[in-house]
Image 1: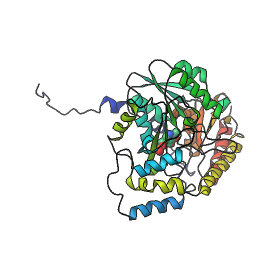
Image 2: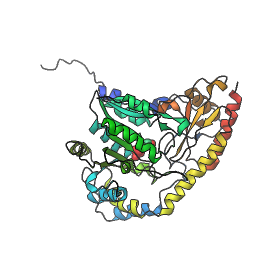
Image 3: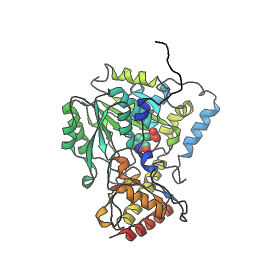
Image 4: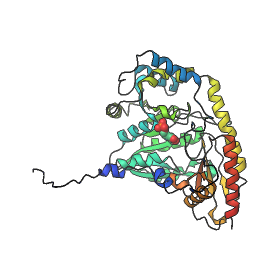
Length: 410
Ligand SMILES: Cc1ncc(COP(=O)(O)O)c(C=O)c1O
């Protein structure tokens, strides 16, 4: 039928309408007092570069500059990444227990792009996906945009944020397309033991559900903890492991992420591998210059750089635990890695603070300190503190939080 339109009426699609970042929506409600005299301190953004105290190693910068000067990397790279770049990832990730080659690697636009492809390749509208609560908000957004039901499994703060496996198992049904596990965790800062990871894998194996392992914080673990790649602990469960340069190498803006396909029983062979390749071809993967420098970045960054990053994170964590555990009404949970600390708020102790969102709103308005409320991670009565700011900023922020909490106590 010919168009009957007589005027303009252009709306965003239902897909666009379902796309949202819950953090943005909540943060938009938090307002800095325009009359504030105190300097603004943000403990809210998971970008380690913003304060200037966490920098990529200079050798990585030099590697990028060297590649730029060859004039050889200005064209379109293959959609899922150059062989050399995929090789660089594979040779870093491969272990005797979970061997992989460049054929098992796809590069993506950051770890977010990798997660997007993983959710896309495994989930059909009407199915469901198991996600951690508390967890990184992108997971829920990715599920929602493709009409996948997000089913949340509980993490237990009193058990270092281990998964409540009984509750998780009770969520699995015929329509469950994947279990997403984030280790080390944003927002919890938890690092799972080998035993716990094996117990999660046992549930996945029992119900034949693949795992998406978000390992973007791999190796960022503090003394006494070890990072175990999930895929190294199973011969049975197929795992799509995702990572990237954003956190361990401290360059989120370079937008390089990857998917590593661990599939020793060829369960993904029938269609998931091809599906991932198809998806990668819709929009080409990351920047060609960084791909060219990837071998140097991943394999020639001096060991000291990694150690310095962890030392600084660990020092900031200790300072944060010491300071926040003395603040009345607040109860921090000891982080074991990553860049975050979850802090419980005992709302019953405060005369005029009824929720985590109200806590964050008032703290920002009165003290110019911003922390994300737990609601951003589907976890009320907690706030998340990012522990990457400089020591002087952290100390000042905790002093103001102490004043704030003392003032609002019953
Ligand atoms: C758990 C987790 N996964 C994935 C990402 C996204 O990483 P990228 O910046 O590489 O897209 C983040 C970023 O903060 C994260 O915290």
